[in-house]
Amino acid sequence: MRQAVMIEPGKIRLSDVPKPTPTKDEVLLRIARIGVCGSDVHVFHGTHPYTSYPVVQGHEFSAVVEQLGENVTGLSPGMKVTAMPQIVCGRCRPCLRGDYHICDHLKVQGFQAPGCAQEWFLTTADKIIPLPEAFTFEQGALVEPAAVAVHAVARAGEIAGRNVAVLGAGPIGNLVAQVARAAGANVLLTDLSDFRLELAERCAVTHTSNAQRESLADATRRAFGDAGFDVALECVGVEATIDAAITTIAKGGRIVVVGVFGEKPHVDLGLVQDRELTLVGTLMYRREDYQRAVELIAQRKIATDPLDTGHFPLEDYAAAYEFIEQESDRSMKVFIDVSDAC
Image (tube, rainbow, N blue to C red; front, top):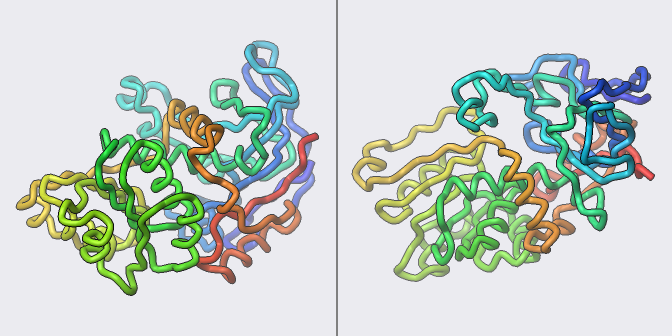
């Protein structure tokens, strides 16, 4: 079978390797679509701090069940599925209390373990997430980033009827805004890209603001009046946006840190204390987040079609990264088409 291996930053080699066979507790999947995410781009550039080479990428994907191990029940060949990419120990304190997504020994397929950038892929049955038959393969590959958004929004607490600011309108920020809206929040989404903001409006996000032309304080007054906002989700991972959230949010507010910070930001903890703000981290997801993401997409509470901005075959994996580089903020979700999985 064909397998895409990143042998070093910026260099992907297509190899021919044996098709795997499932053990008794495994499921063999025929991969259909792979979504390229921001963390994958960091790996391509050699800037991901927790990935070594060579590495088989791919962690957000859709597939069809090809073959079941003898102990696997509840699944059948031909089913559309995706799967969670975490490999956890099951023995550490976070795992034992149910927080396996922050396992002390966490590995993620596509980074610290081989991912799904190949025609057939093995995973354990407990990681499989069934998809509705009506799902497109693109929708299936978007379940993983949507699950990131579901988990992040849950970390904000009950937000129905509340004013929420989402900073950053990239793929994750867009999905966070959509999930927050689906939870009943009044959402303001900010970014530096008019393209991404216009796309968010196509996804039914009502209030948007370009941070180059309007301060967060001014955008807040326009969207929410004097009420302001008391929940923020930072989805960029840069000092300017976390600083804007801290200085603009209402006293007693809650800020969820969703973006991955490549550089340590200078945060005014004195202001955090004085305004009694709560800073909350969020990482990945649990199974229930995946299931909720599937529900929201199936119910059309998350729009997925506007996020689709490019497709490349497995043979042209590197070209997908070149496209992302060239298109910059006009690129949302690029897919690797491995097969139609018919």
